[in-house]
Image (cartoon, rainbow, N blue to C red; front, side):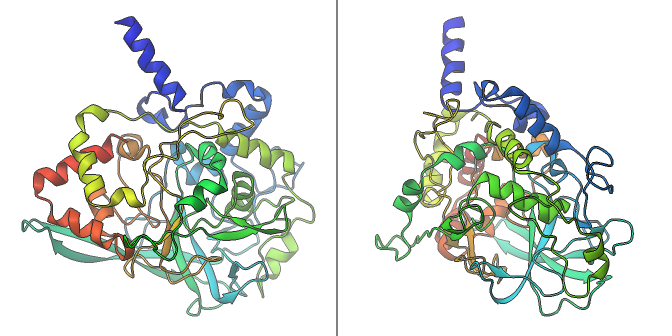
Length: 436
């Protein structure tokens, strides 16, 4: 019996996962990652959890916050290593998410054109003497429907509004509500080769299966050129280091060598006066945070043998055409990643998800209707870790069923297949998702 348990545990390690345990599930380290520079990883974890202060850099540890920001720590938007959530109503603050902004057009690097007054992200907080840009208010429109067997359901669609706008109205802005994404497993996804992504891309739908996944091509600030995107809700960041650097600037207001300038728009004089003149976090700090995140393991799958019927229905409904079960084993110069199996249930590609999920805001080559396929690993543990579900890019879906029912566009056929399932079939498919 002991030998069987040992073999089972070793199988989990070879797949790059660790057994799950309550609310720490999303913060376990990959086996062997502790040999990759323990002191650097410890510093990366410290910076990830550090609550930055409204103090000049060097005046106190953790100085450099703002002048405009959304939250003062990475961990606040990724609570317990998992996903954020949308406010429940118009009087609740947006604590673990943000609103992307742009105007029609294209920036010099091919990305979204920032709003001239508010920039590329609405900052709802400011340090002393710097007005916050605005407050976000979210209400929900209730949409009703029925399954094929007559069972009713309700969906909620978020409706954004802004109040206390400090620099003029936002009527002309393209807006997109986003919640923080889980941070586990990102090291494995970062190690997936570009060739693997492009092998699954089918922008012209040449196989005529209704699925036309595309890669996004985005700006790499370090290289000064265009590369494949893989991180972010629209695959708008190329790698973990740039994703980390962009979040430090946009979310916390911490400048760094990749993003050395604060996003102070037209008329934001207080922001300009308070802006840092030198990078507040150097390359080494950014890399250490990225490397810490890189070591966080996806949780182990549970109950695979008891959810085979649901897995079959998942495939029959066409869900696996986008949520591809595995990239296979990866090759990496990092020994703790090399040879690991990436069973993430994603293709990391862009797909048209229909008008109901569209934000109307292009991002590099991603259209306003396209979203990157989110990985499904760890999905079944979200409720145990956070006490609730908050799914899709804006957290609108409060259950796995709701998330499926919002699928449109290329995924409409899969949604309709799920709607046509009887109660037992739907329950089996949901049980499979909860095993991931």
